[in-house]
Each structure stands twice: as C-alpha cells, then as structure tokens.
Length: 563
Picture 1 (cartoon, rainbow, N blue to C red):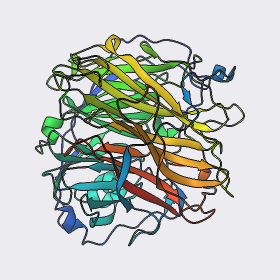
Picture 2 (tube, helix red, strand yellow):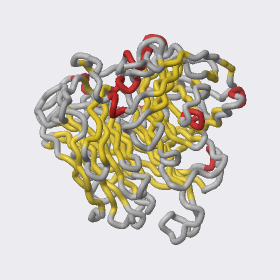
Picture 3 (cartoon, rainbow, N blue to C red):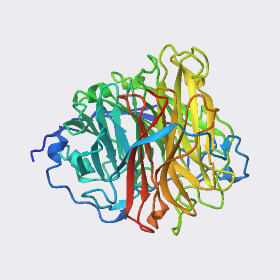
Picture 4 (cartoon, rainbow, N blue to C red):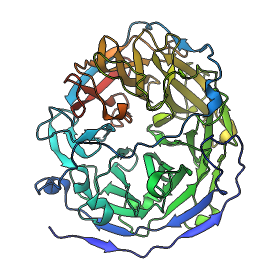
C-alpha cells in the first residue's frame, strides 16, 4: 500500500513550574525535581485509507504468548497497613429489586471470536459507543460492531494495522494499554495507544467522520524519555487529555504521573501543527484519571479539566487527590496545572485498608475455583472518571437539591471488605454547575459494594440522563468462576446503595499464571444517541485453568425509567 506519512519539525519548550509539594514520599522512591511543562508538535502525521479497506490487507505478525508489557506499579505507603478500620459505607447485602435489563450481550474479541486467537494477557478490555457503532479494543486487536444488530462490521484487526500509514514506532509496535473513545460533541472517534520502546510515542487517531470504519487523521507525539505506562484519556471541551505513569528510561524508576493536553480542535481537522502540552508531576502523584465528558450538556464555559487519583501514596487511608489543568495552546507557557505534590487532598470517608497478608497489587487476592487467584490492581483508581453536567434547569429533588444543577464526577477502586473479600468502592463527587476551582468539589455519596462473600473488582461506572448510575465489574469466589456482572441505582434509591446485582455473563474457567494479572481495566460507556443505554466491556474465562484463553463480553444495559 502507499504510505502517506509526513515527518514534521518538532520543537520542545521546557519551563520550571512552581507547584507545592507535600510529604511523605513513597518509601522506595527518591524526590523528583519540580514539575516541568513541555510543549511539542507531532513528529509524524498521516491520513489513513478507510479501515474497511485496511482490513483487507495482510495483518502484521503478532507477538508470541506473553504477559503483556508493561507490568509496572508503585507500592502503597508502608503505614497504610498499620490497622484495619470499619468501612462506614460498606453495603453487605443485595439492594432492592433491580430496574436494570440487559440488551445485546455480544462475544467480544478473545477466545471464540471468529478469526482470533489470544496471544497475551491481560486484555485491557476497552470499548466506546458512537452514533451507530461500538468499537472494542483489547491489548493487540480491535473490532467494530453495529450497535443495533451486534454484527461485526470490521475486525479483528491487529492494533498496529491502524498506524500503518503513520509508520515509525506506532506501526512497528503493538504494545497494548489501548484506549477507544467517542467524542460525543464532534461525533468523532479517538483511538490511542502509547509505544513502550524508545522513542516513546503517543499514537493518536481521530476519525474524519462518525463512521469508525472510515478514514482517520493520525498523529505521533513524542513522550520524551520516560516509559509511559497505563495511559488513559478523557474528552473535554478544552482538549483531549492523556494521563500516564512515567517510569523513567527503561521503566525501572517511578518518576511520577504525567498529564498531556492535545489541541482537539486541530486534531479533528487534520492540522499537523496541533499542540501537545504536558506536565510532568512528582513521584507523589500516581495513576490519576482525567474527567471524561458524557453528558449532552457541555461543562460550564471556562471550567478547567479535573483529575482524580493518587490515593495510595500517603498513610491516611481516607484521601483521594484532585487536580486541574488549564491548557493555553497559542501560548503554552501560560498553561497551568494545580494540585501536584498532593497539595489539594479531597477527603472522603475512611475506608478499610487492604489485607496486609496479600500484596495488594500483584498478589493473588481474588479467589477462583481451581486456579491460583488473580490480582485486584488495587493500587489505583479504575477507568473512567466519568463526568456528567445537569441541564440548566433541573426540577424536583432527583438531583439532590430542588432546581439546582450540578456537575458530577464518578470514579471507583477496589477495597478489602469486612469479610475479607474484595469490594468495589465507588464515589459520586459534585460541584455547582458553574466554573469552579478544586475547592468547589465535594463528595455527594459513596459506597462499597460487597453484598456477599464473593469478590468484586476491576469496575467501571457511568451515569445516564435520568440520573441513574451503573457499575460493571468482575465477580469471582471460591465456587464462582470469574464472571461479568453489574449493579446500579436510580435516583430514588438510598444514597450509597446499589440495587440487586444483574448477571451479564457467567464464566466457566479460571486464569492460571500470567503473573496473576487481570484486567488491567474494563470500561463502562453511555450511549450519547439516547443518553440511556450503557455499554460495558469486561473479560472472563471459559476454559478451566489456562493462561491465554480469555474471552470478553460487550453488553448493553438500560434502566426501565430512562427514556
């Protein structure tokens, strides 16, 4: 095929940024220098043929069986294990009858999917929903589904097939940690993947039309010299925002979270002068997530992008940390980032610390029948930080205060429940529907969903336009194979409580070996076309005690009160 690639000039602007830094530092780390800001343009740009045409070409070779790189983490602060506490928001029984139903329940990319064999683990299951399609991307392959019929329109395709026109490390590497997103305002797809070999690169594709099988503008942005682990994206009016964990050259030393803003106005029209503005944070900042805009209502004009995370790096057991970024693309030196160094803790109710007898990140804390168990990845908040904005006039009490519109942020992570099982701790944060600073955000409700002795983890959550909340997750126990399930709540349910669990798919096998890794994330997306239908993507096993035989599920769910 003809390669349509243009190598572009790049400039780098590095400035010292004065941001407060608090202690303590992580025990195994040394202090970093003051955070810096870097601005760059793409190092490469291309326009692809339609993906439906790329799908007809020979696929690049896959890696052999392997545990997907990277496998990087930061240990909890040592004082986190000092004492167990009672979780004041634990939900230890099933809630009331559910008003949730499952619609399409599709076999996703994985074992059993036509034309696909699993080469690695874990899958990093991710999906996004557009006007007419659903894109599911796992670590090395993706597929496009018709969201009405469930028919496969394209795929499975190797991930780096997407970058064949772009060339360079994007085309030659298929390193995983993938993200598919839908820009509901622009009606465009955002597909992104970092490379984990030098030169470290952010590979970004933006569709030219709402059709995911069509052509894309593609950009390669340098990420400097640090291993850019666990990238996550959020869509916001002021840009596309990427967060990642910088583990330094070669990936051996945690430097700190890095946050980048991309000029989406230029990315959407194929402008190869699009700016990337990045802030390298301190090693007190770890695995933060960018807010991701879901609602049909835009955020208040002038509202900066917010981020949440870094909850594992102090000894308090009751903090999440909130950050904000204000990019100025015409003059990057005027861009600001607030909150680095744990300067702005958002205090949440005390939660139970993790079981110190099991390494909270890599240890096989989650039981499974006949298997070795899997790790909860409990060192970080789970994708996404879903954002919803109320319409200007909200009536009744369903939003908490009559007639008062709010901004909403949703996030979750896994905690140790009172029975020793893993439970999903979920949060709803709010702020008034006007431009606010970090101090304007407050915790509205939270809960730990642990209704029985089984473990629940690797969750993702979102809201619909009726104010309903849905949490999807993995479910496993000593007599329950790892399965896919969800639980939700409507606005009339008691605060902090989810309704009875809804099964999505029952697994029939356990995972063995693969470094005990599971996930490393799942994704809950809300359909912007109706504002009611959730789409959840998660992994499971059908073959007992195997390493590379995971399957995935892509399911639609809807509350009966949402119209």
